[in-house]
Length: 550
Image (spheres, rainbow, N blue to C red):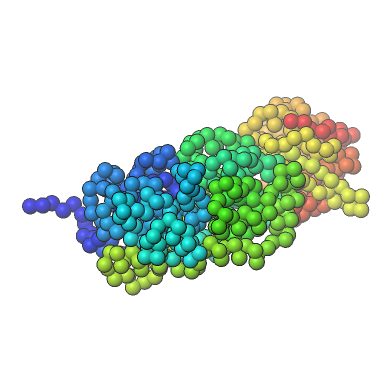
């Protein structure tokens, strides 16, 4: 008697072929077409012939997929096969194959092309034909204008073409309905704007040409106006290793960079963005589909065929220039969006919005010889858990009092880990849990969120160069202890839910720096935040603060 180990007897078996983390991402966009259908069992395999397949087999098992080896896969017959990579030995598989792009359509040359015969990534001849035999049963296109590209690659184009739209674009648009919630989950306050850096892989990418861009942004952009996120192509993580990528961005992540890994909620980096800095990768096309302001930090024309929509995007989207103020360029993009241009570019890449899963399911179930389920497929809107977001624990603070507003101080804060010596009116402020001891040794003001008995005296003794320390009290005010023994109390009135005690302390510092006073009232403005800071207490002669140097 034959033993059956299965519990549910599926009528059809579908093989999902992955070769890289990028192709896995696209396959996962498609899986909702089989949701709630016990007639279909999905099995995964990995063609490990790519340098970018490292860890993929183990990852699939780790997230609960049924995985078989490539050697087993090529010995079995399947009712349908889905693949989003054209470099594996697809001709060895047995079953009707649907070939899909692993990005936003077919917009780049494959790196495996010969210089005298460049093929499009996703439409290579070896994936379309073998020994005069057509390999796929269908080739999915995101837009009808890609039919000419397919015709250039195979004489069977008109038979194979399946115009479906783009399931990833549909998912991003579905997620965007909860954009404000995702911004909050990423730690972006209502008064801040999220600037997302996206990078494809290779030396011509944004990261390849400008590896310090995330840190450069955090160095220049006011912390109280902006947050910065980065979404890097999976091949960057796979080839260099996740440790190395994070190691390259250590100071940036310590300064608050939201670094989203490819197996995490990278979609939110696009959905939640107020503006995107991209390159010739697919995420720039997806940004146009979301309608976000877009600047190009790099664009490698040598990797983009001139007849593609991506080439058009590269010609029309402004470049981010290194020699100009990054903040001014970004603010200009935010203040002067061009939704018509972005919509036109998106219309050249994506068709049939909201229909991709339905169109792919229709064709797949034809191949399976099964009637479709009676309910429509829907994009997955559940995203992986967001990892804890680091927040900077120290700042270099520039203070400015305008001649016509003598009772107001404007603060410009940047994370101290990235600070350079600045103008005269600035100070270094740190929380006592700042991990960099050098910053604490040089801080002019130190705060705590959780004071203990004798905290103030202990901190002033440990850091003799510190002018003052501050800690919250049970009544909601801030207690302040000066190095010369004087005491003060800060009361802040503000409607800003995101008000930071450090802003109030900087208000006191401004009184000392600009007025040489330890008491008084001053209106503190930091980005869109404002609060009235009142300092009271009994003092001797104040000691003017020295400029703090890192």
